[in-house]
Image 1 (cartoon, rainbow, N blue to C red):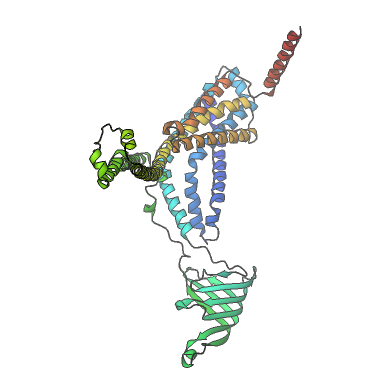
Image 2 (image 1 turned 30 degrees about the vertical axis):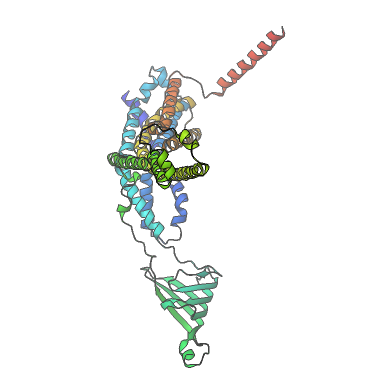
Length: 494
């Protein structure tokens, strides 16, 4: 049995490592596709991009572990079934559970490893990734001059290029407005050609101009004249260099303290502490709002003001005390029409004011509750994604034994479909929990409640050598159903 278990472990470890890195690579490509607009054109160094990919890879581990376990277990047991090795083992009196036993231990170890990564390592890498991504988004893009369009990225200058040569990087038919020192359009430069570059330290932008003319307004001539327009000065040049100090083109890392308390950057202990703090703030704010919209106090105050303004009301009735019974119908019908109209107007105004306050408070409380729910969801997610590794093993292993197909063909298709189904169900539960439609525990564990019985059922079918994936089984079933329908029709005719 030791040799058999060792052989099964060797058959599993290779596909697991291979599928793990394949899945991680696919998820990283999805990450690049999502953030490509934030990365392109920023002139980032390769070490910054490599660091970002490294942190993003750790953030994707919770999704990579379950999918790799599902795919590797299907491939392993599918290959054993395809080569009739499972049949030989069962013929020797070895049950499927004994065959799966060493891989169960590995699945448990991977589950605890996934939980350790989610709770201790991934929050730190998420913090560094979020800080790095924020720094990248805040960086100014590289200066790109488009033909026929004015560009103001060069501080103090507005530049228009007639055309560009993509091979030589030369610029032609340049028109430049100098807005430095508070100038408007007093200084204009026209050049036949030029070349733009940024220094290696990204501190200065250098524009070399060739064969052009500077036009500049000369205010001194206008000052000597009597009401005449200012003159201008024209200077021709063969080569001119404009050197401007630029800001924001160099990469600056932001402080990690900006995102340190975000839910994805915390461990379970820290999440629990933040939940307690946010819960206390939420219920404290709720109590404050309940006091502010106390309808009885508001109506009593309005009635008191009304009584003070009308002597007839003050004489005929007293202001009702709190928690007392007041016959409003008798009071209202006994008043003059103009008094009734004023009472109705005050009541309507008061109702509208209370409604607006309630809507405002409801939106504020809803935002606070959603933010609190994100911390609760993150705490549950650390457990659900780790347990998903074990669940997917008990789905993939019996499913591979039933399919009896190894390689990257059928197992990949089945694994992708199964994981997509799991992801859809998981997102449905998370959304219901986030919106307080379901309880937090029920919503976050909804997918586990569905897939765990599925794994138990598939394991039972694999142990009993069920042929649920065989086309002959369903052909016979449909044929029996068709024959029974024909027999029933004949009996009805008779």
